[in-house]
Image (cartoon, rainbow over all chains, first blue to last red; front, side, top):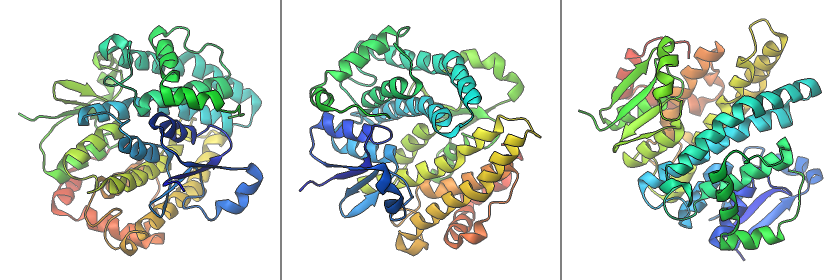
Amino acid sequence: MSDYKLVYFDGQGRGEIIRLIFAAAEVAYEDERIPMDKWPQLKASTPMGGLPLLETQGQQLFQSLAISRFLARKFGLAGKSELDQVRVDIVVDTIEDIIVPIRRFWHLETDEQRKVALRNVYLEETLPNYLNNLEAILKSNGNGDGFFVGDGVTWADLFFLCLVSRFELQVKITDPLEKYPKLKALYDRVKRVTGVAKYLSTRKESAF
Amino acid sequence: MSDYKLTYFDGLGLGELIRLIFVQADVSFKDVRIDDKDWDTIKPTVTYGVLPTLETEGQTFFQSIAIARYLARKFGLAGKTELENFKADIVIDTFEDAYKPISAYYRFEDGDKRKEELKNDYVNEILPRFLGTLEKLLKSNKNGDEYFVGDSLTWADLHIVDFVPRVERLVKIKVPLENYPKLKNLYERVSSQPKIADWIAKRADSWF
């Protein structure tokens, strides 16, 4: 029996970063996926009415990024020094800032016209600013031909994979990294990291 | 001369939690406040075009929560074990999630029906839900009579002294802490510590 159980829906969403961390660290865990029709009954019994949840050491813990940081630190994927750790957190928070507006127009906006308008503002203004920053951060680490921070993969690089998935599944942009050669190369590089490659080769398609 | 220089606007916003950490830890810092009207001139000189920034160790960092976590860890205000660090992160992320929906309606003009609707949603549903979760989190540690995490004050406890006035200034409501007795008690205890009380007394009124 594993020391860890992840509970999330059957898709990537907010759970995938945790799965990628377990994969890169090559640590076993129970990957429980809740079907949407079972969720209403389960919801009331969760600490905050949401998923993902991590069950470990007899406790049920929530907040996907807090869970991710805890596991990444445990598995040596969070940066090797205090300064590297803050650099990793900066990249993660920047990626999260890119994702939050997607949730807003993907999930929350129901008016079709407004949804399209929000998506256009996002693609023309918001996203280029953020991707420029990410490319600059990458380039500031040894010219950008390695990983975001330090000299090895960290969960910041894994979270970048989640971002690209969101582009594909939710924003539906083809070739979102076209103008960002270093980020594009990083994307390919992270997918080839041993545990990650193994995990991706068996990952099923999902709507989110 | 201080080892730390914080640059932000002259209000609470994304800078106040960082300031509170310095104050609680009794560590001196340069507290630079930019005037709104100077921002367009200054912006091109700021590394990633956003504030707050922290200059330390010869480098510039951004992303307010990443900065806050780095300092909290450095100054022993982040919990005493990895699990406590994690629990503090959960509380911080919950406060942050409680704040985010405000920007969803803030971008609408006053008088726009959507702004009214979204603001009412926030005040009547979203905020109480999050306060309920925070009360539950607090109660899960020693019945809520001490701190959010472990047996001493962490940056998770400091965040309430930042969250409450920020919401009150921006949303122009009184946060109904009387419905959440443990949170109310924590808020009063943290606010009345000498260093924090002194800082709060000297705070200027700002709209954010």
